[in-house]
Image (cartoon, rainbow, N blue to C red; front, side, top):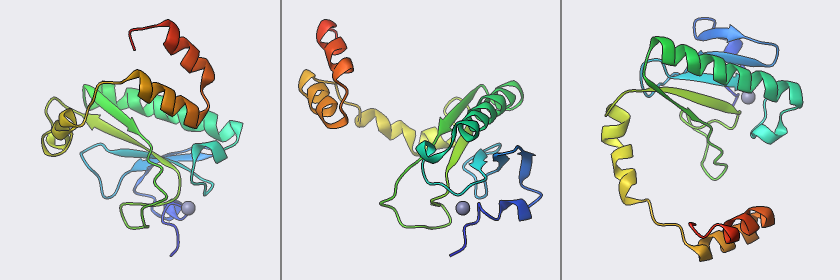
Length: 152
Ligand SMILES: [Zn+2]
């Protein structure tokens, strides 16, 4: 299977901006009007695989286009990057790094059909959970901070 994002420059109508290392383009399919993608030109799967210049342009495009969305399209804008190697490839899941910019409105369709259910998933954070996760991701400094601040 060829990678649609490696070939994105063939779809001139979708591309809004081309930088040295990244593209900004319309998402197709899209979740809502104005759903944009910031795509690295180089085929990598994770942000950590980008070099310094690529990361810098990527985040600059994210900031620039989130502001454009907030100034012209919507009062809110989510920034999302999914890394889910356990999912198979499909039209909705590619292994080529991209960041979603999703314009958001009060109680929009995404909220009403999906995110309203997140409320039932949130749980109170416990001391044991902090220690367990810190041990797994090696965040001893954060752990010390948490121990000093008992409001965790
Ligand atoms: Zn690719």
